[in-house]
Image (cartoon, rainbow, N blue to C red; front, side):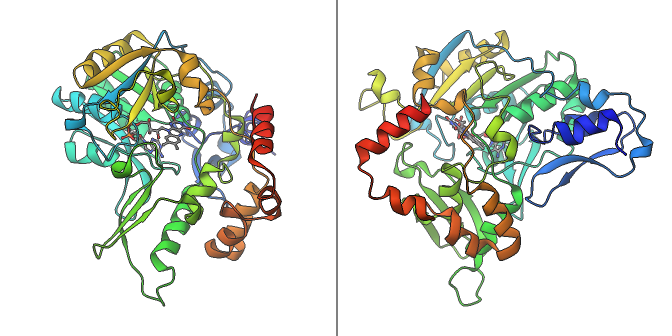
Length: 404
Ligand SMILES: Cc1cc2nc3c(=O)[nH]c(=O)nc-3n(C[C@H](O)[C@H](O)[C@H](O)COP(=O)(O)OP(=O)(O)OC[C@H]3O[C@@H](n4cnc5c(N)ncnc54)[C@H](O)[C@@H]3O)c2cc1C
């Protein structure tokens, strides 16, 4: 029988649980752990309930129940200089420009990379080669095992630390630390959610084996957003170990990416995300500046093919980032309304897709390929086949009504 604290943590909070791990990392008896569920998402778990002393630490650090973000005081757009433009970054390269300064000052940078098996994992490093690997969005949940402890160790050694991640993982760290550190700097990303690590890995292994009569082609490098064709175009690039490349411009040909864009495969909590709001945990928040062309601030020269970032400055520390960026590219003031207009995911969780559960159930039962064909492509399912015949104007009208 679960005690009241475990009942709330493991069952009542389950739907909203983001898997940030603040609870397991803070457990005074070290009896909570983060375990992968059937869909491939991490949740807190306990082996032996009788060891729980009901101290309540796990609940007191849960960001869901104790939200405490800051509203931004200033908002900016950032355009990279064409000569230093980084095509590996997904947006305007804000993260890399700031991270490079931390390395120069002898600091540590923590962020997500692909490990040797292409799993998305978070590391802390003071090497430029690792920070370059952190560049670029990986649209799958990043494993943060051991990271909060490692960051705490650096902070207590009086070392400078920069951590950039999705809002729920940033909030998890803040609650785990449970005190202010002047040497900690945080960047949270605009985010509408993440698919599971398991789904991503089964997709990659399908990609490595698909249509090659049993000959496996190992993936060396995976980029969700290859900006060589322009930032606004979502172009996915895979480089295989034999040197061949596969570039996908029409994302409906890629079941993982198009089901992610259609919000079919997100973690349950993403559909009710506590962190999709104006109040943020990062010193700054960054994302793509979708819709920037409507503001009339871009000359042809400025829109050089490099990305354009939107930035919210949420704390005094965040102001210092703006000073760094001023020297690294062009920065202009804007408003929250201008940023939100074409980036609703900043403040509104995505709508839950009716295929979501079907995809995860089917992945375990029928495997990736069958699941993809049935549910993951843009034109999978009868609704899409009907919608194909509805005039665009009517679809737009319905979309505007639903998203108002
Ligand atoms: C899952 C996810 C969803 C997103 N959704 C939106 C959105 O709806 N709208 C929008 O405008 N922007 C979104 N973004 C942010 C956007 O894609 C860029 O990451 C952001 O604008 C920063 O761009 P950059 O060029 O400065 O840095 P980049 O070089 O593109 O970003 C690098 C930083 O992103 C971090 N990162 C990459 N993948 C992950 C991951 N899986 N988990 C945690 N951290 C990660 C790295 O640690 C690194 O610090 C999302 C990002 C992610 C990871």
